[in-house]
Image 1: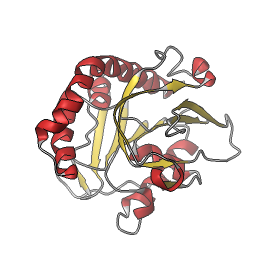
Image 2: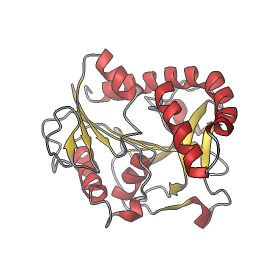
Image 3: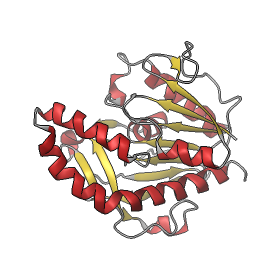
Length: 252
């Protein structure tokens, strides 16, 4: 199995989602979309135009917004590729910005949370409320109630309204940001939360958040370290299970 990873920020690599796939014997192509290069060879390489040569697609997070497509051409290119993987019946997974790209690829608006919701952002390990549909979902059917997953985003999206086989199904929600996860058809998934995070990724994000808020790193550590200790292991186990089951969709 060969998985294409679109890496939209170098500080947001595939993490657990790459590690679990490799453990199961899958090969990978990682493309740094902002700089247009193959992350293994360093050669110039943009977002592919077609799904040919790949069995599945993962679209990862980044600091940019879907509404910044003029500044970041890879956004429209990624949306087109998402649709082509979906039309080919190949599994798609969008994470954070990736989830917003998936939503936008099928016509849903993406916007800053503060435009429509009271919250301005979600950050840290926050609990999920699984919708009733998750109980019958191939990936999420045994997800722990209230599982805390890592968030860092200030944008959100509406669900696509589109008539396709299998429909559009919301799988997880939160009061402050209702659309947390959805499935489109049978093999296209979008997760607003960061399934991919590892301890190393979070260490880097602690530094980035401190810089973003102009605070000492120790102040951010006081907030996030207890959450990491309490919740990262459970999220990582969950993410590995989701990845295994998602990869199995390619074989159906």
